[in-house]
Length: 155
Image (tube, rainbow, N blue to C red; front, side):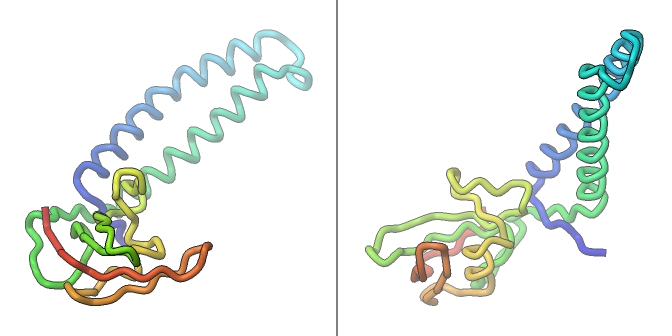
């Protein structure tokens, strides 16, 4: 069974989302009962919308429960070494020698705008295992990009 590596804050976000979805369940059941009371179910848009929402919520709950059960929580501050691994914060120089800083995180926590990239993204896969001074080639839709690993931190 594949583990889902994630940081503690990603795990907390998942469990909070799960709690919110579970709290929504009774409200959906009430909406279904209320819509059912309106009569003919074949042309009852409220009933169909509530049933559809119930299906979406149940699917989300199942997905999150699966991820939580297989979560492998990693604390970056407990890591060390000279290679890029999950949880590392990496500073790379692009073609123009402009520094870019990324933290390698799980899929749940990734947010490119905040400099958090998934270990499974093209950039994340290219960085994993590299050391300071290594050149990294990343294929993106606009073409190949080259980066130089400048610094690796575990913060």
